[in-house]
Length: 306
Image 1 (cartoon, helix red, strand yellow):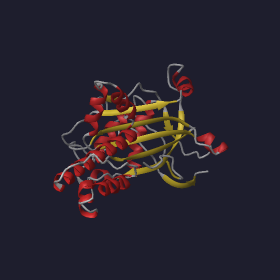
Image 2 (cartoon, helix red, strand yellow):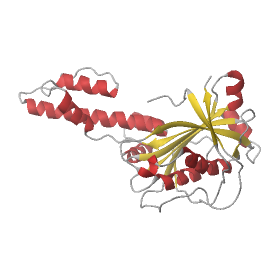
Image 3 (cartoon, rainbow, N blue to C red):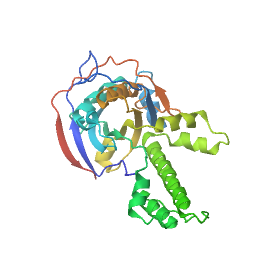
């Protein structure tokens, strides 16, 4: 998976923050689907103590930076038509709940908030089809090596396949490839969505865990996601260093949903957790959508990452 610390930023400068109304907007109705949002946040302990230690969160200003977009394998117009301005405007509502406010001041902003978004991909039999068409089907070990190369992992040839019927051997190999593709995809998605620790705990348990079962169920379908990463902007300007203060990974099931509505739900849930540290993955319903951020004129600037 590519690094989420980009080499170039596109800064999005938002206008003044105004109160009232309903957050975001949509050009289509809500489809039937699963509204639950999974959230995993991490935050530096010293930062949490400073930000929230006095009771009411301290005010901070930020600049948005456009991160990486993941298109997924399923064609989804609600995702492809979402502009970063729309995305940023919606997220600003959730951020305001924890006293994070946009600024146009390139020199005095407290935070640089980099946003990555998109949809995960669920493994199917495409790897099997690739193996069948591009690699000789009479060479099981070559099939495995080719599959491993396509996934970017190292494999040791397995000589356990014994039998006179080559067709049965090939079928076993293709099943192995499908299983490998599924495991690799689940592992990659878990890392992207912040589910890795739960899967590791599940793997270490002799009988599995309830959390692991829940995470595997969440990963069985494509998921919309947004990753919000807040860096100390003054440290970046003055010391040319990336100091990550907090991050939030939010996701929800995409089948039966649309991204326009989904990003509103994820922002609402994020509004409860931005800047905080969660104990594991939380799954929440977006109960309150009554918050609005009106964004003024917007500028996008290029900025080289030192």
